[in-house]
Image (cartoon, rainbow, N blue to C red; front, side, top):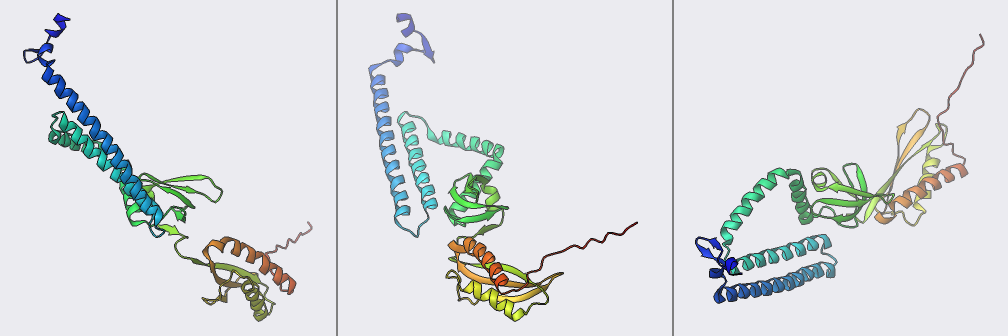
Length: 281
């Protein structure tokens, strides 16, 4: 044990020279201060994070995604300052450490350009909020309901309830079609009738069938016009407004009901036919 205590450690000083009462008291005091600082930082960061998140959840007009992001930022900032205080209690110069971390961060940033571009795009998505959790969107030919917006990716659930992960750089760098922003949508159909049909009667049957449904909006005024003379049919283009939440069901139901109404009114719905002429040898 005596040999161990007399072992030279640094600059001619032995272990015994460092293990003085003053040094032990100083180390114990620094450890106690560090523990107190970390405990206080954990409590304060947790409280601040929950408080910011609660503000977003309490007010319906505020975006939960944005406030979840801000709550995480607040927690990380408080803990970062706490770590700097802890290092100072042990006499470590944080100025040089911050410079070293900055240099390392630059090197890491160059190596992880793709990942950092996703993070930068995630910050833009969270701040400007072109999409929110619960929105039905189409991004880069992928559509679904937004489940989560993180700093790295956007998670969506497709119409068949499969998970779709889109990197934030693709989301921010492409056209976003958001079907959930406005309360109403305009449904559109194309119905073809035969050339020998009374067009005024066909128009009346089509429009009256659709407008008889409670989901159809009379304002804005519905649109119906002949827009194409096809190879076998005269085509009507119909546009009617409805509530956004009823769009898909409304459009599908009216497609079937109009077909049934045209059949009942004895209005011909043509379809392509092919005539085969067989010649005997």
